[in-house]
Every structure is written in C-alpha cells, then in structure tokens.
Length: 467
Image 1 (cartoon, rainbow, N blue to C red):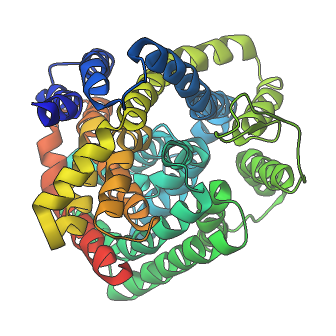
Image 2 (tube, rainbow, N blue to C red):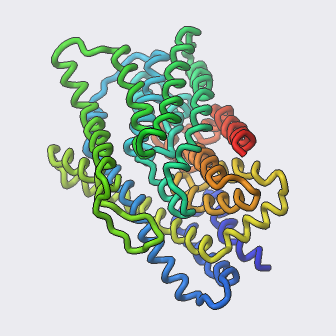
Image 3 (cartoon, rainbow, N blue to C red):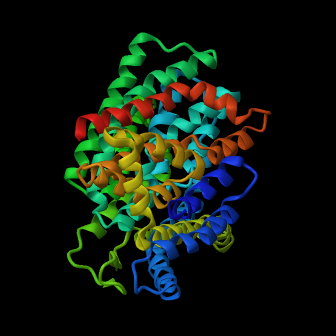
C-alpha cells in the first residue's frame, strides 16, 4: 500500500501526459496532489507534513528561479536577434546546406537560446531551400541533439541541484554518449535527405562525419576547460563559423557587414558568459546554506543583460519584450511545479524508497533500466527540465542502490532524457503545427526511429562501459 502511494504521483504524471488529453500544468498539479499522501507515508517520524510541505515550497521556488530566469532571458535574447535570423534569404537545397542548417546552425542556436528555437530556425531554413513535408520536420528535430546544453543548460543545472551533485561533472558524463550519438545522426540525416529526394555523395558524407567528429570532440574536451553552460555554444560555434566560411565566404564589405550583424550577438553573448565565469567569488544570494548560491554572474542574469542591451537597439523593444515574457510564462510555471514535485518526492524519502524497490526487483539488471526510464521521461515531459525534475532523483537513487558511481546514472539519464525530449510528443506536435501540411508526429517518428533506437543502445553501452 505504501509503495503504491509513493509511485502514484509519477505514474499519474506519466499517464496523464502520455494520454495526450491533459495539458502539462493540470497534469503536474494532479501529480502534486498525489505527492502529498506519498510524502506523508514516507516522512520519518517526528517531521510534520504541513511544515515539510511549506519549507520545500520555499526551497523549490528558489531552485526553480534559476532555470526560469534562463528561459525568460533566452526568449528575450531570441526576440532581440530574430530580425537578423529572419534576414537569411532562400537558397538552393544541397547536402552541405542542409547539414549546416540542422546539425550546426540549428544546434548552435538551440545551445544559445533553448526552447526549441534551433528546430524552428532549422525548419525555416529548410523550407527556404524547398525541403518540405515530413523529411523537413524530421531534419529540423536533429537540431535538438544537444539539449543538455540547450539554452545554456538550465535542465542540467536543475537536475544537479535536485540531487546535490556538481552540474559540471554530470554534464561531462553526459557529453560522452552524446558525442557518440552525434556520429549516428550523420547517417540519419543522409537517410532523411534521401527521403526528400536528395542523394548525399560519398565524399560529402566523409566531410560531414569530419565535422561531427570535431563537434563531439569539442563537446567532450571543453568540459575540462570551461563552464558546461557554454560548451554547446563553443562545440557548435567554431565548426559552424568554418563551415559557413567554406560555403560562402564574404566577398565584399557589404557581405562582411551582414555576417557581423548576424553572428555578432552570439559572439557578444559568448564573450560575456566567459567573462562572467572568470570573476572570482562574485557577490551571491544564498538564502539556504545547503543549496547552490545565485551569484550576480549567473547565466540567467548575464543572458538577460545582453538581451536587454540588444533589444534596446530595436524599434518596438517594449512590445518584443512583452511578447517574449508572455511566451515564457507557462514554461516557467511548469518548471516551478516540476521542481516542487521533485522536492516533495525526493526530500520526503518517497523517491529513495521507489529506487530501492526497483533495484531489489531488477537485481543486476537495475543499471540498464536507466536509459529506457530516461527516454520515456523525456518523451512524455517534452523538456530536459521536466525530465530531470521528474526522474533524475529517482535515477540517482536507483544508481546508488545498484552500487553505481554517483555521477553515472544522472549523467546517462541527462543524455537519454534530453534526447527523448527532442523527439517528444510536445515537440513533434509543435513541428507538425509549423509544417501545417497535415504531417502527423507518427510520420516524423517513422523517419527518426534509427535515432531513437541509437539513444537506447548508446545509453545501455554507456552503462556497461562506465560502471
């Protein structure tokens, strides 16, 4: 009976979202309601339920403030640079242009702004080349292959905060399977090009694989040198600049000016983030001694400051800012509710109890439950923040109960959950809505099944090799 009460919040959340008939906010509210009795039967003796719930609301709100700030600031930044992005003209579809639009430029934009912007921009570029229908939608979704670093990594940061481990360490583990997955996405893209009626020559395949090897290598190595928040930007930005130069080098002063206008905001933001992280011991707000501090150099504040600076130069800045904040209100609310659910379940002991029971039931196979659980969490919640808030504490406890190194299960979960989020019900529905041609999510999943299968295989391989 107690185990059923402890499992009910997660089962309710997953079931409601999977049904497709309940929106995220009411689904999480229902799970929160079920989490109250789950917490009650899980709390140690002497701990009062009302005081526990109230304290965790305050702590959860503080933890949620940081990723909420990143999302809102990212949307402000996107509003500030949207005119430059939209200025890209229509071009003829070639394998190299499709590769750049999806696995380089789309990934770069997603790393900077998050919120699916990389896929939206990639789809716009593909349609400008005349690539339409399900192949275009599936290609656009490949731009979301670096979600753990998307929007400068609020989901990774939040997951780490919830389990009390350093985000840098979790991200460095996540980078290993993610780099391998990148190499798989090359053949997936060639398959999609073939579905769109465009054959990729063998020489071009080798060139694209070379770019993906570089991105993957940078993804792994940069975690040893710089903060994880900017690793996605660096790993995609450097190959992107070289690829764009090779594709269409600026030939006159006007072309140089257009290139600077388009890439300047991203260079400014990257420099600002690196400079902020170089500040030693910045002033910080720390209302809870055992939770991460909120420094004035936090990524959300730096991103917001750069966004406001860029917005100030645009006509109608106030309208653009209001529109961005309005778009971000619901995702921010969902983040807050997910964090509260994770706090009530985790701090009451319900999460640890579920993990112990799962580990005992699965025995030596327990580590291999992490990838499918993570993929399901990402597919259902549709965001890395949601996936990590709902399941990373469970995966962490499952890993500990199975005797795994502390970082392993969270790092692998961060990979598979984010990969699932990039091909989730919500995201595929968004892309189908933008296609507006009758394409259904099932058509995108049929094209992307090798990518989904590779996520599981790579996740299982990571568990086997890193244990």
